[in-house]
Length: 185
Image 1 (cartoon, rainbow, N blue to C red):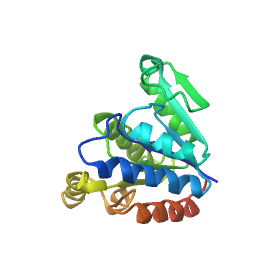
Image 2 (cartoon, rainbow, N blue to C red):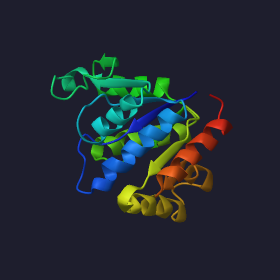
Image 3 (tube, one colour):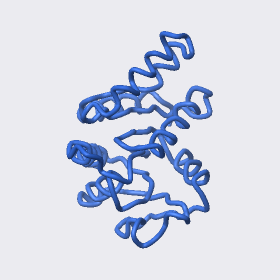
Image 4 (tube, rainbow, N blue to C red):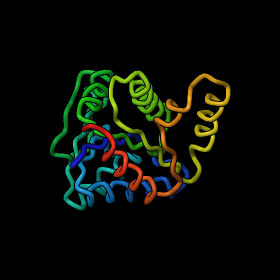
């Protein structure tokens, strides 16, 4: 099966829906036989994703920079934990392992990782699809921004189509599965 990089927050956010739907995504990916690659943390949405996948016996790869690999943050239950020198090495390794991206609720780091993946796809550095779970409408403004970029001719339709937004866990999982069949992985 495929390897899915999950970009998500080290906090859970205000809305309990964020963590619950993220756990549902992790369970759906594991049930489909996919491996999850994520940022290696034990807290927030990251921890929820790893815990949900591990509870089902799923394959999980953590990638964490040395500066964050403290006992308090690094997930002790992930057997395939890869400690890398810095954030750049983390993103590169995640990109190297990945067949598709799932972006879940998160903050600046989540957005930075997602934007790099989208930009690299636009530049044809990779062909991995990116799906964004708009859990609790947390990414409504981001979807609006992308549509504004399109309407203002900063991106074209093919670039806008590189990113799929879904407010439903099931729809995002279905979209990821369908997208994997369309890419050369």
